[in-house]
Length: 337
Ligand code: UDP
Image (cartoon, rainbow, N blue to C red):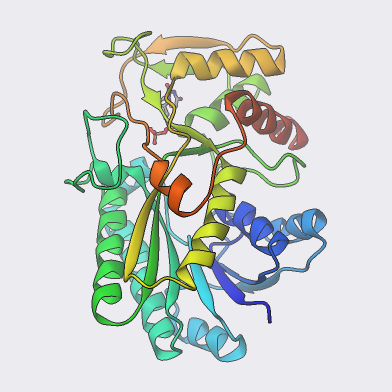
């Protein structure tokens, strides 16, 4: 019989793409989402892609009673846990909001999973746990250091909680450390829906090209990199989503207590290279200026993703131009508003 997977935060950017891939791989999917950074209509958009209905619970996972009721109603076999706040800047201004929601959410979820003897979990973490590293490509054995932000702290603490439970309580956990997810589903039915002014590079680029923003500011061109701008490992969100399916397959059958994987392409691109790729696929000139460095930006970081490739038998199919092309198509589908 098909397994049933609960996806927390399943209407969000990465969550929605993961629901699509789980459904395409014959999993039954149940979504819990509090709509704090997503829209209910995303559920219908997922169905338009896969032809499968999305069983949706609108609730905050920190509400223990609601979560308990969900686990009573649904026979859950495993959980992919995304639901969390994710704005680095906001976390600096409102750290307690982040600690309470992100760490509290993990605890609430693990308590209910424990009670219902659901042991398999895939956790959405981030390369931010590597801090201000000078070493790239970076693999999973690199030490987890002091976080650069309260957001980063919540990822480190949640990883640690999960590892404890895996060591002592029979939980089977797969921790996925994302690099920079960008792009959108090729159907242009789902993608990123930033709240307000985007902090991240690619939504800022597409909104600028759409005329919503006047110009992009490149945060510094005096870094010690070939063109002076920061280097990141951008990964297409559909490739990332597919890795979650592989990780769930693994979590449901694994012998070892827990495992950790970097998810990136293994290639770095500078900010100027991203702009160039966008201009090429969109046929537009992107208005941009060079500005000051942004506080807290790591100079350059890209993944050694060979562990995921080898152990999960997963590879990236989309390149930088595909990332820009799908991000742009998604932006255009939203109109100029
Ligand atoms: N960036 C930029 N202008 C922007 C937003 C981002 O130059 O308006 C740069 C940023 O300094 C970083 C890269 O783009 O080098 C990726 O930033 P993003 O916020 O998307 O991801 P993160 O910093 O979390 O890696």
